[in-house]
Image (cartoon, rainbow, N blue to C red; front, side):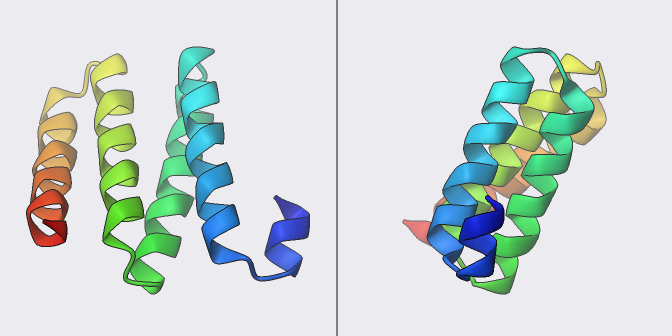
Length: 88
């Protein structure tokens, strides 16, 4: 990830952040998973990448459900749906 960042390879950084978020989620390390998804969201919004924006919001929604924060999960899922509609 550091190498990709130094090379400014945004698609590779986004892919790695998404995979890290998924991995941390599977290991039930929800704070780390959330951190990765928030970084992915920030990158996706800076580059106007709707596909990565969708992935970030969906991941954040799953993390919120795992943490029993259903309001936040719903809000993230709505953002995911909005990004999905805009991408279509």
